[in-house]
Image 1 (cartoon, rainbow, N blue to C red):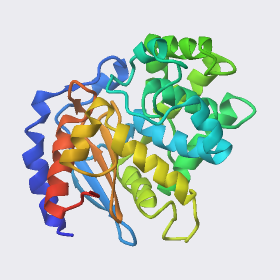
Image 2 (tube, rainbow, N blue to C red; image 1 turned 135 degrees about the horizontal axis):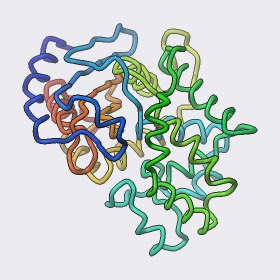
Image 3 (cartoon, one colour; image 1 turned 120 degrees about the horizontal axis):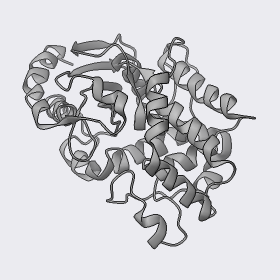
Length: 305
């Protein structure tokens, strides 16, 4: 791959930043500059390459849904998870309540929307909130190769204090018989997983593991069953960019998952990609990050289709 094109593509894509806005509904996220844009590319068997202005750390937010799903599948298997969570795109915003009321049996359409992600998180095993969160954290640390990863307590508390819609989703799921157990405990785990801090380099390595079928090329250890990696990547291509997933699949043609911190995890053939661009479009995706990945896919012919 010609890595020399990364910086020119970043300069070109950064022009999109002024058309987006940094997330403000979680107050802590609004403190970051919307002009930042950076990328790390990690090919299987090679060292990662970084370009642009990668923030040292940013919170995973909805990117964590991919890894919570993988861990829930490892813990509970496909049948139990998908009995409660569907496999279809919604076409709605990621925090919509509508289909939980109007579509029978009232279960979330997929694991990449908030209702589905909260349900998935409830499947992660552990005797209490701390054990369950520590299992998610350890899983992400292992995939990223970085034991220093932890969660941002300020972002967690900021989200916990303002998450009225997520609480409404969780209580509706409880009323529908989808969410079992204590609602507040499930939400605590969910908010903490969203507040886990990583870097572009961490994201790219995690994406590289997924690109390699769940196997760590450094140790040859199968960290995730290949079948579950296939499931996760399919959800990323169909639902990972919220209700812009179809457009992104056509334009870039690679599995990706975004978060409202401005991060994007992408899985291309034989490589993982981590992007940070905090300025978001109206659908909650990094506006310059989408442009950057689309242009990179064009230049490197990354599409899986």
